[in-house]
Length: 243
Image (tube, rainbow, N blue to C red; front, top):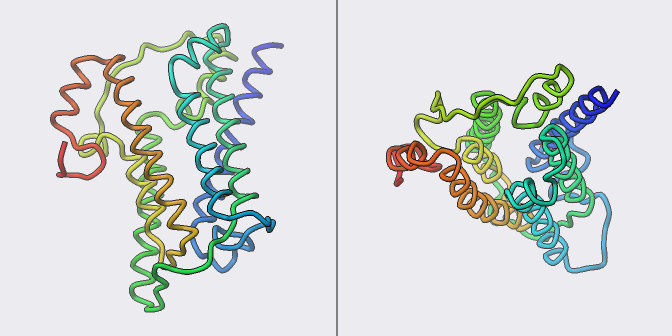
């Protein structure tokens, strides 16, 4: 019974992750069919919106960073199976996004608000390419492993944990972190850059850069010289850019 519950837990965590991430992609863009988006709050709070939004971003960043670190996974959750750890991370991340969707407050004013049809469509295309690239990149490194579903399936079928191998394929031949690169493109490519959207984009960019610093330290610890050589030959986020 336990293995079935673990698989169900990981499956629900995966589904919730896909739903919240899909909503995030739609939420950050001014789609007319979206009743609520980044510039149109679900509830109105009588508190400075910059303070609320910054607090939400800090909470999101802390949750992601702390739960991804080895001291949390191997310390606080040392007696928990890997399948449950991964699913718990998915649940926690989804809850943080839901809190952002619900409590995020609009800030008046725009940096730019493009009305030209050609520019509007061009930016929309860049936005789509960014998010699509991030999505495809998850499958290159194992989409279902990333979101914890494979771990739950292995628990269900009593399959041992596979040996972690360092591989460089497709997008990863050109940049080390295509998921994050695509995400940043998707966050910044908007025809309507409000101050609200700017705060989210800046906050998420800082989180991504800080997160990658610690992630790369972890990857060097795991793969050693292999990953150090990879850093020397492959840019982090921008193809053909500085390593």
